Picture (cartoon, one colour):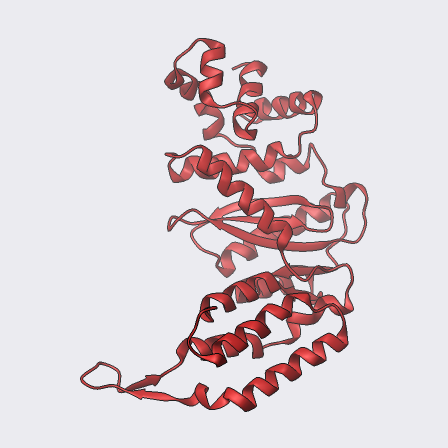
Length: 311
């Protein structure tokens, strides 16, 4: 392998060139080009090793920052987890797991916290996530009881699924409107008004939450008539404190939009290279996030030297 091969692989992964263009440029078959790049797909650089070469901003600047995490599901085969410094827009660590389990987040954050300590960086001053129990527990375990904002983009998106816009019920349409207003709250008075609108809704439509349907010749004896309405209401009323953490902490965003953007990029890149098996997809995403640290040819050459020393 040569640095020229590595540079072409960099262009392929980042989208500067595609296989057809590289094949035409090198005057070789696309299958031969794939075989040439196979060794890179088989041996991506671990994110921990990348820290030793390209320190992230949290280690260089040593400023306050906020931790964010999200996952990109590769269909039903597993999830590609991303751990990000959302304050400076830098991906810190990534991995692939079968699911977003506590084991996955506990393992990743244990390694990430060690990297932060070894590099002399500061632990995050806050966190943003979709509030899965595994994430909350792992963050508390490794970063301590820091302020943890529940991503309001996830909340409103879930509410929209449960509360259709064209529902025949005024209660559903009204609750959907209340859910959509959640993400625009910026001041404490707006939070008070929003909570009051939920109480007004409950007084007017709360009886629908208790309506039951009796089954006739069915497995279930009875069920709640408006199941999705109940789920939508519980989504907005159960554990409300994490909705408003950002009001007391200006450093913390109200949503995980930074990671949403990363996931959109990953989805697009995988769409441009259809047909890859799961392990190839994982390697592709790992290399894509690795190459995002590269700013010029000198840094790419430095990364090439690191890869050669590893493999």
